[in-house]
Each structure stands twice: as structure tokens, then as C-alpha cells.
Image (cartoon, rainbow, N blue to C red):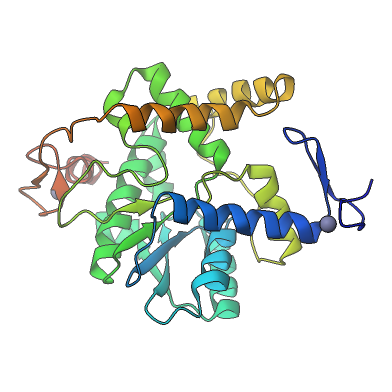
Length: 302
Ligand SMILES: [Zn+2]
Ligand SMILES: [Zn+2]
């Protein structure tokens, strides 16, 4: 099959009924990335964007695009940050790949580790709990925000793709978690607190499969592996169901995310009260003591 430009196609976009060659697909993804940033005002002229990288294809593609599109803009600064959860043969490989990419792009890479911040690695924590993802998620969000702020970052860019977003929307729906539901979207803007750095998701409209091709076509160093501890979680089940639906009804994911954005635009949701500061660490939280400090205390007894 041929792309509309005449070259050999490598991809068929089902929801569009169109074939793409590697060049046109790459260009299309770059265009979507730029449109998302423009439409949702994800960037300001003087931003210092910290890109959260993992060594995977999504965050690698995000850093690559940020550098390609904004690398020459003098007022915008780009740095990368990787969280080392302490998972051998997984994050160790990710860090290696992230270093390769950052060297290629000439972007500074910062590393923040669970061991240093919370005293234990995920390899240790996992041995003592049945739900390691809960600890990991809380610690990661906490550390990303804290380090981004310490590095002088004004935005934290994450590589969430269309699949991730559709899954998150459905997960919060299933759990009936309105607080988390409200915090999705390309630029969750509900939390206003000087210590909380806004998160942006410039790849939220790009399907995972396309990002995989994008990373391969553009020779972005990345590793393909799933976290060894993420077996049997809700996200995995939701992912399978959505993929099944997408197979039957192409553009399911796009519809879920589009529908979410329309609802959020219509419902002028209240900001849910002000954030306080944790009495132990001073980081922003809705409680007296933040979840990270609560968990840190828990794992100290492990
Ligand atoms: Zn083409
Ligand atoms: Zn705290």
C-alpha cells in the first residue's frame, strides 16, 4: 500500500481510513503535538520545561519533539528528569537509554531516586506489600513535583499518550473517584498552589501505536519493557477492555478523551478547596500530613 505522497506506507490509521509512510506519519504526529500545545495553551514564552523521562518510547518522543520544535526558541529552556525507583534490570536500562537520548539532544538530565528521598528502593518495598503500584505512584508524583520545582522548572511535561488518558478516564469512572477524574486532561489546572508545578501532556492525542512508530522512525533510543511489579492491576484490565472496544469500534479512545474534554469545558468545576502544606515536609497536600510522608513512615517499618 502507498501513502498519499507516493511512498511505501508503514501504517494504516483505521479511524481515518488512510495509509501513511514514515515521513508523513512523523510529520502528522509533530503537527498534533504542536496543535495540542497551541489549543490548550500548554506553554508560555518563558517556560523552563522539565520533561519527565523514563527511557521509554513515549517520554523519549516527547523530549525529542520538545527539542526539535522549541530547542531553538531562546526564551524556552528544556531539561529532563528521570525518577529512579530502584528497580534492577528495568529502570537501570531506562536510565541508560535516557542518558543516550539526552546526550544526542544535548539536554541536561537530572536523576532523583526513591532510595535517596524515601530511604528504600522499590525492589525492597515490593517484598513487603501486595500493592507496590500504590506506593510507587504516590512517591513518583511527589518526587517529580518537588524536583521540578527545585530545578527551577515552571512546567512538568509528561509523555502520556491517548491510550494512557483514555485508561485513566475509565479507571476513575469505575472507581467513582471524582477528585482524580477532575485532574485529568492536557493541562490539569485545578490545583493552584505556589509549590505545585503545573503538568502538561502534549502527546495526549497521539495513540500509543503511533508513538512507537514515531520513536522507531526517528531512531530515538528507548527500551521496551513493562514494569516487573505491575502485574494484575486495574489499569491492565481497563487497557484490555478499551483495546477490545477499539478493535471493534475504531476511534473509541479518541471519543473517550474527546468526550472528557467536552464535559470538563462545560462543567466549571470548583477548585476543590485550597491546598495546604504538609506539616512534616512542607510539600503541597490536601491533608495535614501528605501521602508521601505517610508512606515513608510505613516503609520505614518494612
Ligand atoms: Zn507519505
Ligand atoms: Zn509530606
